[in-house]
Length: 271
Length: 93
Image (cartoon, rainbow over all chains, first blue to last red; front, top):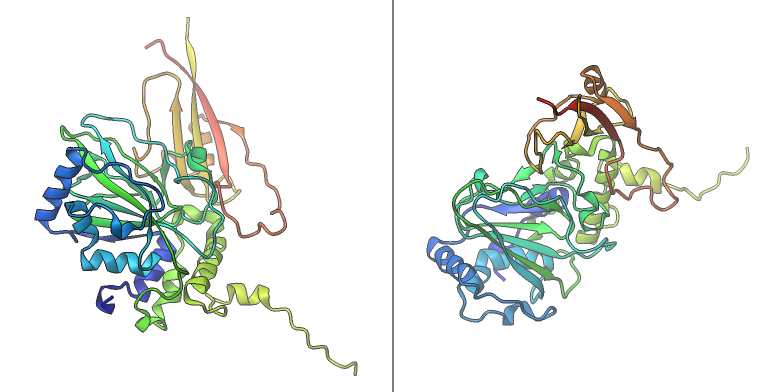
């Protein structure tokens, strides 16, 4: 894997903090049109879960999308080489569908702290706001909820609708809260969603040349406004995740964990 | 004869102070005059629960505050400071 296609440490820190990364117009137009046609024609059926991802969809345009060097680099950086296919879905929102989907986190409560899956959202056509691209809640990925436990939230400060041009790829942590949005146009909206599982330990899989960048603790200390009073607790989650990803058990942000891990054993002799 | 229906406003606050900032919000309208859904607004209808009270909303539920279960101190899940407010409105035009 050419390191230039791997994510940087700064990008990884942003992923750890937000639970998502976006890459605008990454896929060329000819591939977008071909992949979109495959989705429209229903050619991308369900595959067996657990299949090695690289073996899927030979010759299909959608496979070429995921074999682009930049996309391979994103995948490698997060889940390593040879990931396992979990599932995919061609998510469709019909024209004139005016009710948004409930907020949810996919699957069930996931208690893993040292391993994670990714979900890749690929938008094969322009998706303006009124077309209802998926809404994400950055920073929600560590919260332990079961699917639509969170269905009675409607809006958050900092919620982010995915408004993008064709060929945009957004990769998210498996736990991120999200919801489809109303489509107020007269055209169907498509997005291809793919979930991948790692088959290796997720430690330093990206380009670590900038691992000591002083901006990294700053990124990891960026609190999302909707956290309210739980901001510092969420930073603790980030510290733990970064320690796991880097293999550095002493990493910290503003002494938050070092302070409470400090239990000196040395006893002084009585004077 | 007025036909009253309930409206519910869920406001999630920055902290336990009713005067603190709203960080999330939800509206359910039993009068059927409005329909609300996810992502339908970028700003909350009120800056705080206190502001909503001053506009006639009644608080009907406070969040319970529990100490963290040992070992769960750094787990996060639902938003903690959920306040449920209601208004009764007439549907007769």
